Image (cartoon, rainbow, N blue to C red):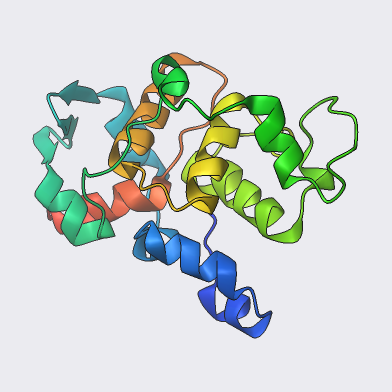
Length: 202
């Protein structure tokens, strides 16, 4: 299970990180990034074990009961909707001005540095904070949070440039990845637990 993390918008306000607060609000991610509460690891594992994707819904069986997570459920629990750009490996080329190396250099404190491993360490403050939000909360993984993938860079680019992302699609794609890779920890434990609460299975 991936350990859930949250964003403190109060802390960002205290640190005068208003630009990051603003762009996260533009993405309408505030409620999702602030999700807290109990997580139920055993039920989350059952959810993933039985999960399949039906059109635009998530469908699973928990405690012998079918659980259907529609766009209406997403809206109530997270405030997210299905509008915006669908980002995945297949459509990275759809953005004509996206160049992995150029985008990374644009995020660096010293843009003349040599690009070696796409490390988070040399990024400007705002970009570094967004990078960690991407790798720890939006598309969390078990390790290697300090090296950016091509998808990470595209997400950072879109967030920093106020390109609206279809976050429901991104989260669902990440769930599929977790199911496909045996050593990948299950993400979004609190989100799934909130779905269980909302659908009255807890």
